[in-house]
Image (cartoon, rainbow, N blue to C red; front, side, top):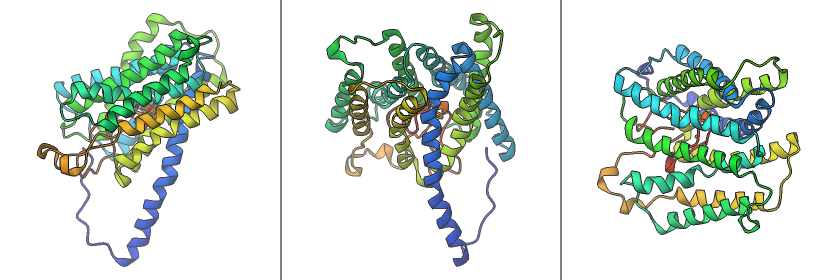
Length: 369
């Protein structure tokens, strides 16, 4: 747990301007968060030019863990206790970090980073679809159902379904969509198992990413060999992907969620595919057909509709006093998830939940690629 803040006196008039300045500052960090997670798909693409996909994933997790470990040490945060919590964190690490990170890395061997970024934006759609089955408190509404339908029409538009998906690498696209699906499953799992642990969200996030690093440390040597040479640019891309997209982005997201709440922070989700597309076209020279940006807009519109909530008058008494999950990455994103967070206690002194990698339902705040 984070150390409790000492009792404080009522704010003096002289302290109010500083408070206002801090509230304005979240917009800058929000923008930086969107840029980091948007560029993460470019970093993945560049990283796979010099390393095997599993090596890219292991590297990003290793550097992300290092950043979060330093943050935990500075805040004197403790690791979670109890075998049950660690067991759930191990599953969450696989679903929200190890698996989707690896799937995106393999996907970008054959598909553009722009398409990977757009596929990542489908996470709220998968999350809403799954939450209708797995979470009894998530009641479908006409608006949310319409958003789900619109979103998947957008996916078909991006993929050019009317052309028979010609010119599209089906395997790579399927891997990217499966990664987004894994994020959705992971966030529902976290919401059901790790929402009331009494452990700080930074501690959960650091532990989760650390466990994912151990998972990749076991898998990577079995499927890859040590590179004969290390190229500087791919190495820098992996370092940036881990330290920024999986580590630092989570810390940025903690601050944004703590200051303005998960609903506003979740808007970062809708900037990520835009930035990923712009980065892929401008930096990597990737080509776009008309249906890719049009479909992306439709996907984001549908995802936005799935995040609407019933009015307070229709809310059940059991949900009074609760807050929707936030992200985290990710991602995190990274995330970050990196990534993208677990449910927030109200009101929280911690940031959002572990990993922000992409999030399901209203947990779909910054989707960590």
